[in-house]
Length: 236
Image 1: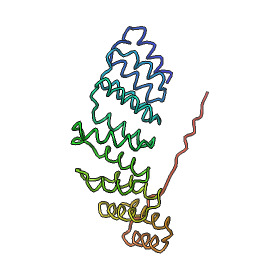
Image 2 (image 1 turned 45 degrees about the vertical axis):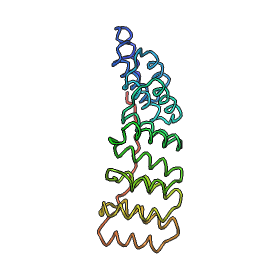
Image 3 (image 1 turned 45 degrees about the horizontal axis):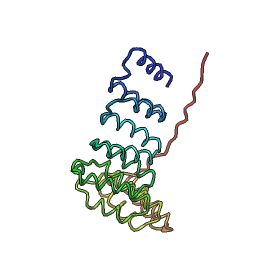
Image 4 (image 1 turned 30 degrees about the vertical axis):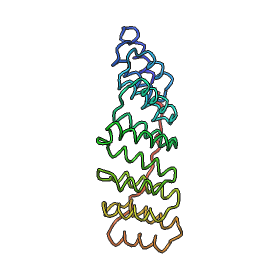
């Protein structure tokens, strides 16, 4: 980060600090590093923030868990009539999901509909809303949303709901979701393992064993888990 600050100092010396593209780069640099105060300070100096400016600031808040601040910035955008794009909505929905702001997240998802953005919504948007509903225990609503999606649900959507089912102990929906995953990805070991865990978590040990036996019969092997520890050794 020292290099970034040196570049910032050089920008100030050379007189490029008022260029919006340069300012956006600085906002993004500080925001992604979690130095939100610095990012906000640079943003405050932008005379006419464009959408990249706003999204860069939102990215920093969203990535570092400042859900309420994301909402505040987005509301500021709305007051100033700044037109969001699909990236803006994705950042806001992600932040609402992680912060547990269910009503606010659903409000913004509905705003996408009224503003015509839902037609261009990507799988990531639906995954965020399913995750938002699932974390709050609204599993049936999340499943209904998946069933009504105008685009083909991907693995990320199903896994978001399955994760919520495991957290809230809903075996019925977990079985439906995992069965669908196995239909779509019959050789994906993770889907089988998750179904086995769902059964085991609810005390259905026999069913869990049957899933494992079915995996063995199909020649499906669970990918081994691994971890990495980085050891930085200073030499000289």
